[in-house]
Image (cartoon, rainbow, N blue to C red; front, top):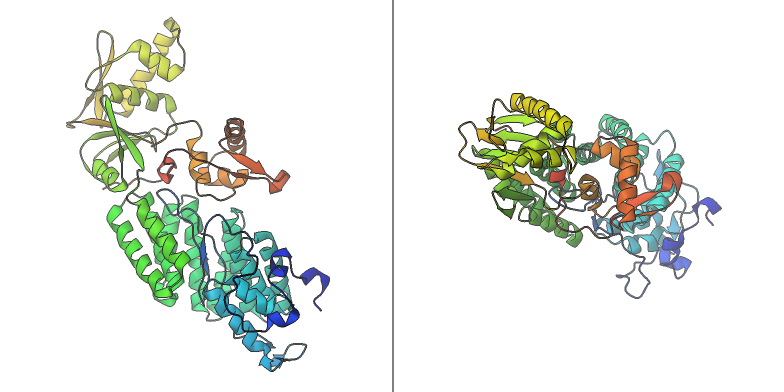
Amino acid sequence: MPPIGNMPGPGEQSIMASPAANHAMPAKVGAAARPSQPATSYACHAGVLILFAGAGVVISGFRSILPAVLFETVCMYRSGEPTSGSDKCDGIAMDSLITAAAHALAVGDPLAALKRVALRDDAPALALRGIAMAQLGEFARARELLRTAARAFGPREAVARARCAVAEAEIALVCRDLGRPVDMLDMARTALEAHGDLANAAHAGYLEARLFLLLGRLDEAERTLGGIDAATLPPASRAGYWLVGAGIAMRRIRTRPARAALDRAAHAALGTGIPALISEVERASGALDAPVARLIVGDGQRLLRLDEVEALMASETLVIDACRSVVRAGTTLVPLGRRPVLFTLARALAEAWPGDTSREALIARAFHTRHADESHRVRLRVEIGRLRKALAPLAELGATKHGFLLVPHGSTAVAVLAPPVEEAHAGVLALLADGEAWSSSALALTLDVSLRTVQRALEALATTGKVESFGRGRACRWIAPNVPGFPTSLLLPAPLPVG
């Protein structure tokens, strides 16, 4: 009988009719009560496991589970010696049960895997139980089982311990515990490469790239992904590799490379035959045809797809990008993210182009006051002077009888590129739109703002019912039950293409 600490959890108990069920060769479980599935789907394979969830313009979810057959070679034998207990169970080798459970996980059937190993407490079985619970969305229990398995493998089984670390880091990524995965993955990847486990080392590397993508560190994500040989990955991990590549291209607003990466991901996913993975790739492909921004020209506006945004930025149009707080024309960019008053003035002038904007309207928008006095008019002149200097490479600001006029250099048009849905704290909503439960610290890390700023934003959104929280203290997590419109990752700051 397993020790109390390793007794099956509620999700594991629900599929066990008797001890014999653990070594029977079951068919698909149909009548058993299936535990509630996670909000986003997952996929896994026989070498390394991956989890995906696409949202918005970038693949933002990625639910992960770890290697399914990573323990086959160490199953019941450590350094050539059998583990404690019999290696037989009603004539079926216990090693075969581990292999059968691993292959059940590889085809996305965690219930069948648990029917084989749910009552066992040896290290490989604990690891596979952890994988199965992660696939069922029971991440707390999965972490507990994986940590127990890592301790049970012992110091002489460095590869198995490193694989457990990769799995735990992957679950931490899904749970948006973004502080630890980088260190865990780096150490595990080094150990796996040192012992020749190139497939799992490559999987750890692609998880690092996925984390950097989630944090908006696109250069690091691209560099990490470029150092991975996709040929060393099995088909399902290869699909995840190309999905990360597509996510990087989407964030950089490069439609053609993104579509090419998604085509490769689709080919790899079809090769696995895993419906959940195929569905995730199809969902990511659909993001290329979904509205990602709003174009405002004169009195009209319309929604744009990602390829239309790319075409707009490649033109000579003077674009005031309200998604990333930059002004650009062709390859020339003027960032105004840290100068919100100047950007507000630039946008007001662009929305009125080719006409001018009155001083009263500029004061009301930039200084948020309805009653302008002489001090506001003086401040407006100062800010217009600063804006004129900042936009000198792109445009001039001319004074008129009633206000100011934007005069672009060599551009035949002026346009404003705005988020599809404009409201306060849109960046927080864009992250929560992936359906995952986020901590406030993870949101602050991803948005690169202070924790208190995020907490104020969450409190404001909670009062209007746009976000909900559960748990207390450090276990508190936030979700967005209903996100209106099309919140996308274009709302998040990221480097823009320069050519």
